[in-house]
Image 1 (tube, rainbow over the protein chains, first blue to last red):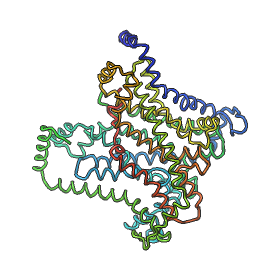
Image 2: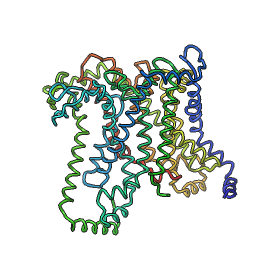
Image 3: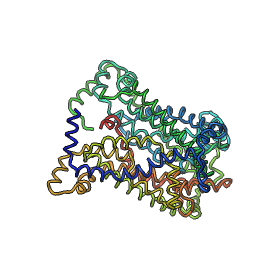
Image 4: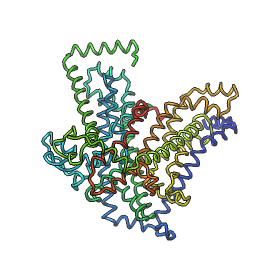
Length: 306
Length: 300
């Protein structure tokens, strides 16, 4: 095997090897300039104190120690961020999958539905988040209210205070993301379409119920997509920034995420070292979670090659 | 949607089987599906309808309950007022400069790099490709601060360069998608072009790139969306209001308007900002929703 590989490699012409490097050179340069060097600089920075104006000073683990003791900003932001991950990710994965299952059958008019469900995901950015801070305008179904509370009023439900309430300000942030959950169709639909029809038919002939067909046939086959969505969801929710920045709760602390914390320290207070330490804590948490996720996935994610 | 004969036959058999069980549940189930879909679709569209209606109302009517869907008087001047006090066109033009440059950069560099990975052998190719995939795991905030310091050193603050230049160095996800696609293109095409005296660069531009069109369009749309909606980048790098992007402009309009409650105008601005995205979606709807298949994609 080894010998064979060697033989294959030695048969590659110098010319071909050179072409390989030439064509991938844009990536190599970008990797060094925008990923590798910044990556290690950021680690080094996290052990320094630097306000950009005066020269940087090596402070060892001081930034990390300071962070660990910062209950008001860091721990609070960490708690909020974990809330976004713990509540937001399962909700968006489940809802996205449910919607996509409903949209997976080729029935009449399905394309129109797919477009409508996908549309909110297309609208991104500041405008939409601002729009949502108005849609979530507190007030009841009887008085001045945003659309959401007015709509809840139609069903006799008294809407919560959303951004005006400590408890509801975080769910408000998550709710906005759920409006765009249709965007995940582009992962779910191909996964669902990839489930072989023959398997489903065979199960049906064996008298399997709808639920049973999904659970025993489709579900195992779409576990790679579920794994992907959970992983990306966790990574995304740890980096949540725009939502808490643009539609913050009445008190900023209610909704602030780690990313907002990082941004404020870096670009408002110019505490580059301290902010880099936050970045590294975020990075390590994301890495640990991804690895745990990866290890656990071996138990439930099904790949056809196995 | 072309079904083979045997598929049709088995479908018929199943239908017969189901219909012998009972006919009613199927009809009920189907109408239930439409009902649920319609209700959700309506709920998803409601915010948009509400905003359109709000953008045409006098401010006093916007939050009144019960909701008045048709404004008592149509305030079209909400729109003209936005355009007169808010440099909508300038901000859009600024954003467009960044977005178009980013698209050009991503497409050129990604196609080139993906071609390198897909068509040229090298003992280190697999290792380097793994490195490409590994970079997808590094979240942006880790590299953000040193990048900022670097661009500051270059004197690029308050220019579009920090938002444009990195796009010319191929994003990992685009390399990945294009490489998969190129590997599916028969190598014989390359070979015959080579026979005709085509250089590797000629093969890339005349054969490979044109065949990658669907993926390239998808990448263009993703890049458009990411840059058009980008908020943090402009927030970090731009501080001259003349250079603001649309997102930053709307943000500052809102931030500067604390206490002033000209909501009708706000909603008009919000809707105007969404129009370009909506237009692009209408045109490229098929590509917008083009999916990623994960199962086979992970196999080299």
